Length: 234
Ligand code: SF4
Image (cartoon, rainbow, N blue to C red; front, side, top):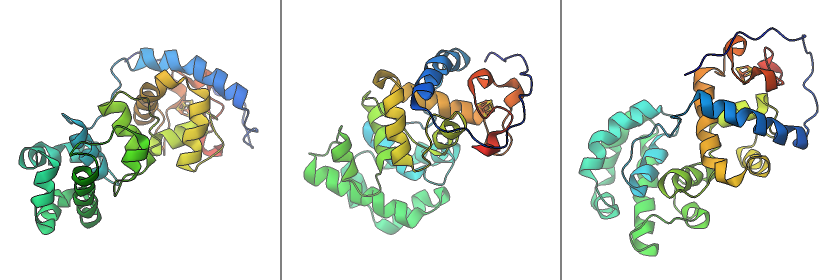
């Protein structure tokens, strides 16, 4: 990964400026190629081999690290290979198998419920539409966009905690509600780049723009970031 030259501190700000959609669109144009160059291999961290595995892994990733989910799914996906396997399994057994990902009771109910619906209403296949995915228990827009983008190559903006935080700091939206923010981003990021943009922003959030201590002095997009050196204002 290329490391940028340290950025000079900017004049101290005391108030975040008003959101400007045109300027935000221009900012996306400027930062996208830099992020692409900085993170040429940015991609989803969850491991999966098919849409069902990604759906399950994404449900398990709520309030859990991707690394932990990958540890659990390594054996889990050998045991449960199809929606039918999940449906036949005892709920308490599923709970036990996914326990270490946290919130395991709700997650087990969601996974079993989603698989039942997939079998009954979608011929045993994970639906490849936002509308279809949203009918599945435990699936919100974030999960649906992730599955669409990474399992079906249908552009999707995944509004996770990193995307929300960075979009605010980069003044790409003035909304913190994930759904409103997703629609804001959809207007300023070209549709063909939605999935890649999500991965780039998530990777940047893990590498430079961390929640507590962002590394603004070394950040390769600081020149375009209104929050450079003062991320707490956003
Ligand atoms: S300059 Fe700072 S706040 Fe802005 S994107 Fe970079 S690390 Fe985040």
